[in-house]
Length: 74
Image 1: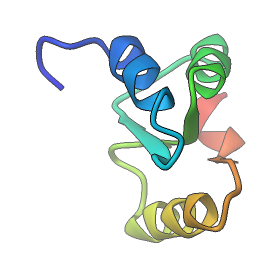
Image 2: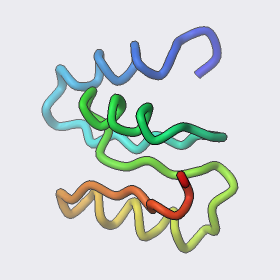
Image 3: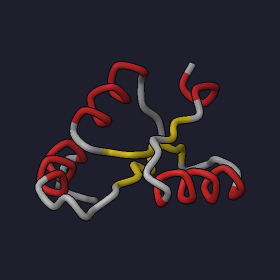
Image 4: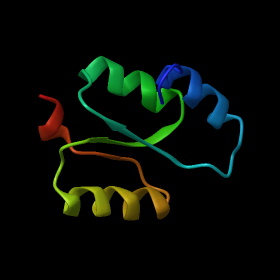
C-alpha cells in the first residue's frame, strides 16, 4: 500500500480479530517474516510466486493455518 508501511497496516488489522491477513511481497528476509507473523499476518507469499502457491496460501489461511513457503525466503 503506497505511503503506508506494511507493519503499520498489520498492527491496525490485528485489532480486528476476524481479519486473516496474507502479506504479498516483492521480497522479505527471514527476520522480517518473523516480525510480520508476530504482527498478525497469517501468510507470506512472494508477488512472483506461481498462482498455485497463492491458492494454497489462501486455502491454508482460510482454514486457520499459517502459510509461508520456506524455500522462497532462503
